[in-house]
Amino acid sequence: MLKTLFTKPVIMITSALVLLIMSCSCGSSTQMPQYARTPSQMAHINNGVVALVAPRVLLGNASPASEPEERSVNVEDLTDEEAQSLTYRIYCTGAFIGEGLVLTAYHCVDTLHEEGRRVHIGTYDDYIDTQATFRHRRWRYFDIAASDPANDLAILRLSSGESRIEEYEILDLANNEPRNGEFVFSLGHPRGLGWTLTYGVVSQATRVGNAATPGNDDTTIYVQSSAQAFFGNSGGPLMNSDNEIIGVVSRGGPWHIVMSVHLRMIRSFLCNTDLSTLSQCSYFLSAGPEAHRAYEMTVLGHQR
Image (tube, rainbow, N blue to C red):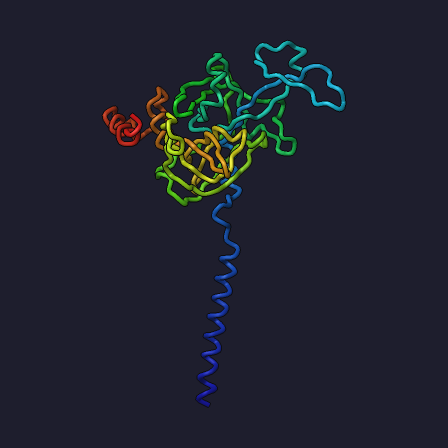
């Protein structure tokens, strides 16, 4: 009798523990992996990223067996006939950091800058996934508002007279420095494949550009990561797990190593331009010029 009375509670408790363990195991197995983004997160990021578009015109009457030749053009100089054969390719990426303001890599716009030409920007709202094209060939003109060629950074501003962009999201700069081993991801347009997400880890949180090449005068600080990037990813944001910018994709290397201009360099660049209305620079604006200089000496002192 004693054995029976004692056994039942034990069985009941054991069964309850098994069920609890099973429920915990099942719950953990359905959790999203760290690298997965929710639909709402993806919508936010997609609308925060833009495509730099190079308009092109098809030349001549190519035979059916050959690809038509193309040449880059300034859309403002096109004849009516050329405008009918207008096409495009996505060649770089950028991110909204304010209303009508896009952060990108300088090497994406260096030639346009030198020639005094504007940049064509396409947004996710006008992109048609199934056709890999933009609705009604719709892109907007942006001016190059500020640049830092030495550190491969540029800010683009919506040109005067262009219609306001309704569907967009501002991507914030991270409050915390990137860390070795941290999960990161990048959204860009590798080889023209619009709005493609890749992910990896930070393999070196503060890599100075000339570290691997003696005699190289590149003193830019980079975030080295394994978030894959190809032609078309340049200028795009490298983001942490909180969907905050910690770098701007600048160049790739062997074995899928990607160098992104470091958050420190971005902050210094943004907050020392005349675009002082950027909310990203609230700390600098409230602190005043003395703090600017102190920050530069602390963060960038080894470069001077």
